[in-house]
Length: 179
Image 1 (cartoon, rainbow, N blue to C red):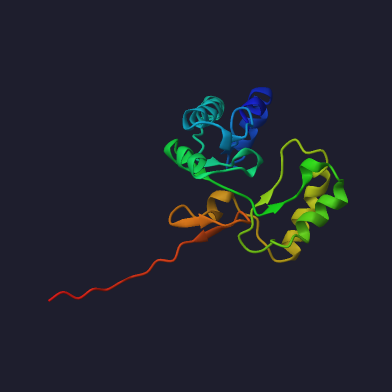
Image 2: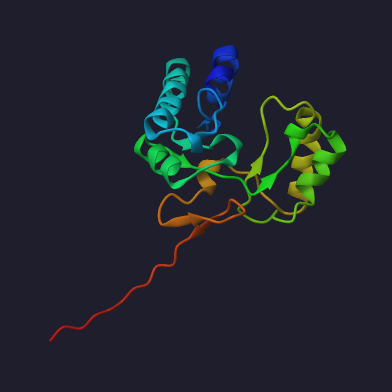
């Protein structure tokens, strides 16, 4: 959630939290965070986090950078503020407003759609409300289960690849013998 959206729709924020959905921070003003200082990034996250907590009592711990732009500084600053940075690997392109059929096709036939995919939608997209039912049914028909992102993400020892997918880091166990 963006802070400006939280300000505009506090009752919706409350309903989303009461329904048990994961709530993630998307900044206060939707800036290009890779162009901000660590202090400015922290301010963006803190401002929205406090707004959501005041309305819902929920302390968010998920963060998605606006425009999908992240750097090591963005990720480490978010981590210092108590957030796991999440990225998507399937973009619905709902923000381009191509229409319902285009959005459905974009998701259900996306080249990266697979187990563990995170699909990007926007809460103010024009066609998503009409497309979402068909998309959910199509995903289920393909054998996918829709789960809260908190059940899907890897929280430790991972990297994010160029497609936005979390990849577990290999763990090697080296046994050593001592004399």
